[in-house]
Figure 1 (cartoon, rainbow, N blue to C red):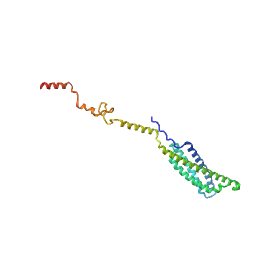
Figure 2 (cartoon, one colour):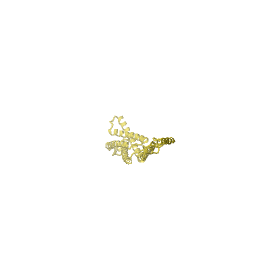
Figure 3 (tube, rainbow, N blue to C red):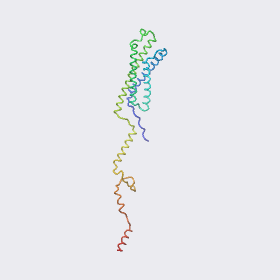
Figure 4 (cartoon, rainbow, N blue to C red):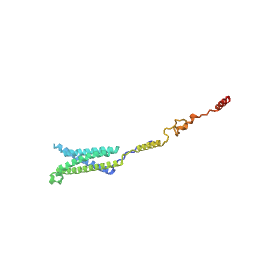
Length: 235
């Protein structure tokens, strides 16, 4: 039975790969939850939805979708560094833009202490704390995605230096084919006749000249001698 081809190993270092992805997952989940709550409350009170909130929600949801998709690919077929680099490059751009807008939009809130002196009511204090939590996890999402992109680029360069992976069975087939080619090149008489009872057989090759004597000599038997003596007597 032919050996089963070995699965392609993952080019990513295990520990950094999963730690960074876990940070991305946590930050995206919390940002998406906070944005969902804010957008729901603003829509309920008939306020206009800020573009910053919409972009943050979109970025966090896309991060969750990309993480789930690449996790499935990584488990089934081994994650392609080039694909993951492209996805993380897009996410890094979105996180950079959304985090910059959030920092600019909520700078006044972030610069104040969350107490009654600044926010009057318990609801105001809660909103202030949620804003700061949103800022913290948006920063974590931006940093973790940038780290993921850096890991992708590093892994992509290492894969390029190592070369392409070939399953063990394919390499054995290539080696076997190479040995057969060498055997054919070492055969001194690949097209000559062999000796297995006839000229066209296979086996040890013998030059054609070895068969030439069969056409010139043949055993005549005693009848040939009798015929020669009769002819001499007549003469």
